Figure (tube, protein in one colour):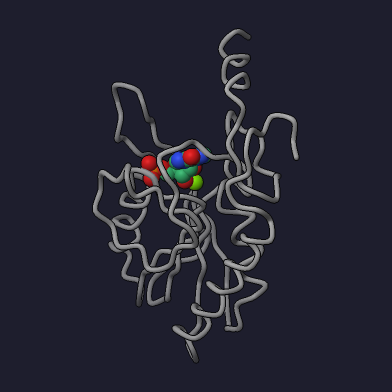
Amino acid sequence: MHKDILKIVFTEEQIQKKVKELAKKISNDYKDKQLTVVSVLKGGIPFLSDLIKNINLKLSIDFMAASSYKNTESSGIVRLIMDLRESPENKNLLIIEDIVDTGLTLNYLCENLRTRKPESLKICTLLDKSSQRIMKIKIDYFGFKVPNKFVVGYGMDYNELYRNLPYIGILKPEVYRQQTIE
Ligand code: IMP
Ligand code: MG
């Protein structure tokens, strides 16, 4: 275990098992259709990478990136910082996220995508932190529900670090303290 991690919340084995279950469900639901998975950078990358290897469909990949300003006065403002490469029109889009917290980011991305007339639009997130939800959004596929705790690993970061951990965990309190001293 990484020295900065206090506790593992989901092990690598638990995550991989869940990813396979989700991929199977998605493969069944979109049977005979072509799917475009849209990954939200950067946190969605490890999940996307494992998920698509287990999806048995004709599939293409595209990316979007958004930034949201939380815990500031401009809370709730989301900005698109990278758009799709291909047009989403008439495509079956499945957004892949690491975690849905307030829902502000996904709400913004979904509203943006809907105006561009996809054939369908669904959401798949590994973690659902539903206690924090501000925007009502329909999550079509989720891996695990998580309590209102800040987690890192498997795509999720604290100050851009820990995304590479194969498991999901909680940081030791001194990690946050060190960061504020520096
Ligand atoms: P939302 O707009 O509040 O739903 O925020 C979603 C984004 O915030 C996620 O895609 C993550 O990048 C980030 N986020 C929310 N909760 C956590 C967490 O516990 N750990 C790391 N990142 C988080
Ligand atoms: Mg994210």
